[in-house]
Length: 458
Image (cartoon, rainbow, N blue to C red; front, side, top):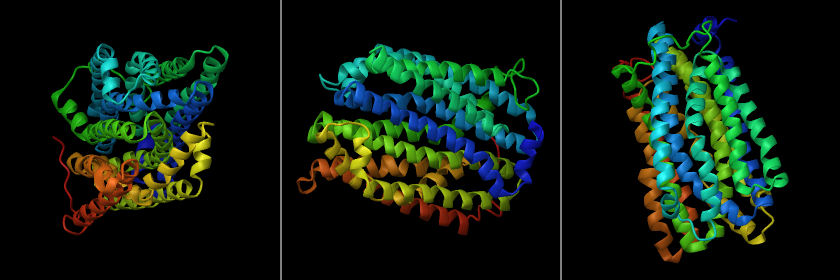
């Protein structure tokens, strides 16, 4: 099938077949990336030590902060490319590609420079101690070098998937993950480069992935590819990219804020090992979230294309099917965390104290995770059809409106301390899911989003 036929099939083929076709590569790719992060933590925990796990956990907010910019551009641009292709507007789809590439370069240079200048100060703010700061600093020194590459790679990979090449997008991710997993144990156990070796392995994978996706968009037989003039920033294009990608930016930014508050609270009530326990828990959370994200990424081009083409019944179908799939994944994650918490924790470390802390926290933190899929799929759906304000509000509920206040309040209620920190997660998950359900009912029953909800580009 040609690339043009591939995009046109978004408006004609079976929704179930399309969601499988577009989601499976995204699930494999995102899950593989998450599995790599888990394996990376296992290598670091077994080859460097428990304090290295805690140091790596401290880098998560900063990594999320950098990723927030790349996600904003990548998701915003890919959504607009899908909508433009659905409207047969190939010219603006190409301009979106070029503008996204330039924006990624600009923002990555700015964020990397600031990160290098204030690295130790930022890590101390995030809860680093004398024992964990050296590990976090070593990892971030290398990660900052790769910041430009990861921006370009992730941004272009999103657009590759949205423009009719989901399988190729998957293969590129699998290649980068394979390079990471192959090199990490060599650098850690053979060369004894410690946590710096893990970061170097990641950098090598990013270099290869960036080269592949960039080359893809230089080929003129692709429906969306680089052409002279597409790199010139246009106000309308930039505005659409940033506004539609804003919910992802806010979500990851809030995630960084939450992890900072979480780490500082954990350090206060449980010490460095409690931070390490959260690093283990977060690895499982990310794996589950990435599988759900794979479904939402598969939904995005289908919903975006059909919304642009005004095939609203197909938009409804893909949303309902994605909601079922995403919720099934979070339910399975909930079951695993409640039944096998010690087994999960023991994969990362042999330290009994860290295992006990992680297992205890895992059972509490994921107590309401079964309903998180509703919130994730629905917020991403509104983003997929070009309604960033609704998506932004829903993204903010779970982390800003509910989780941060819970983190600040619950540890002080009845002397809960560390238990209160863990409890803040299921409390916010429950409140966010209820808010999302109420919002969805309003837009379906009152606004009739699947029958007469108008969409207008800026």
